[in-house]
Length: 419
Ligand code: IMP
Image (cartoon, rainbow, N blue to C red; front, side):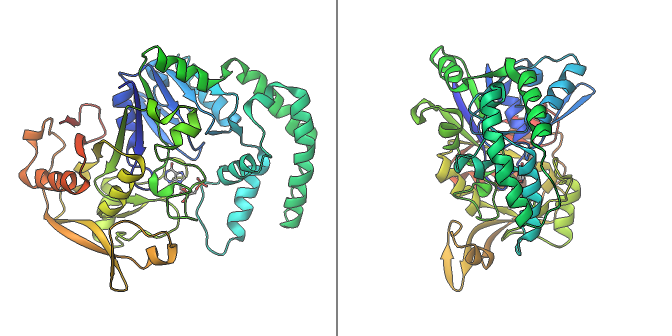
């Protein structure tokens, strides 16, 4: 290990949860460095099912879990998750960055209003993510340390409530923000979370210096990255591996390993171009067999063939050294399988996604065809896989130029092939 990053190579929902769970077992720390409660992962421990949005994976494995400064924290959601864990006898060893931005009620209101007013919808999760990051960058954010300091919170909030009320009024919203209510509510969140708040960058760097294993858990995926994704149909943070440096306060040379998670097909929630999207029976097969419904919003995900141009782009951006392939079993039962290796636009060829969103929307995928394969849910080793599945994986590995180290063939922990 010692510092390992798990990155989503597509549009999020790559099945990172299971891969993080696998690596978390041998980690001392699990760190979130980007996103907020727009993320969602389900963890099963015996009969207990935990659905988390903010809590890093590893909380139920008794690991030190860290919410880095790059995360936007909705304190109410986090407290609910702490309470849920507590009700099942788990006391998380949680650390929250004192520098992390706080999601405020007006962020969620503005997220909804701005989404409704846009002519081209993004399809956000409505969790206030974009407005929170905007305020952070505009230096109008409230940080976790402010919730522990009533004077600073009061000063900042008085101005912010006035400014945000003007915005809401200008948008024609009827909502009236009440300073006293919000001030009291957030001060209380601060007092409940105070024991977890610290300088997490120092904590993580000390842990790395002491030879501990630290796992950085990326939320969302490369194509949702605000700089490199399908802008403006992205989230507002940097899920790529570089996000670890700014979102956790760790220097780039301290990172030892970067693992890219690739779902064996492509999905995307929300709007924006997706060249390999399938609106036919195969798309339906992937949706139903893959249970492709959003953890945070419940929305059905758009499904399509694996887009290796996207994966190659992700490998380049994050310097991914190993690949974990998830949900290979979902492809079983299909007669033929396609993989996109690049695009054609107006007679020109592209091997990675273009920046111009209009061009990306006009991309025609160039496909390679493979034969289908049968049930693989029982496969426990490379040798157990049918030849056609091996051919598919070999092609992915060769095209990507990165070694596949894990293949997931079902939701259970034991349904994982280590290569
Ligand atoms: P936001 O992050 O709520 O602003 O949403 C922006 C875009 O990112 C929307 O298309 C969302 O559906 C998508 N998105 C945000 N979080 C996730 C995630 O965890 N998985 C998949 N898509 C996400």
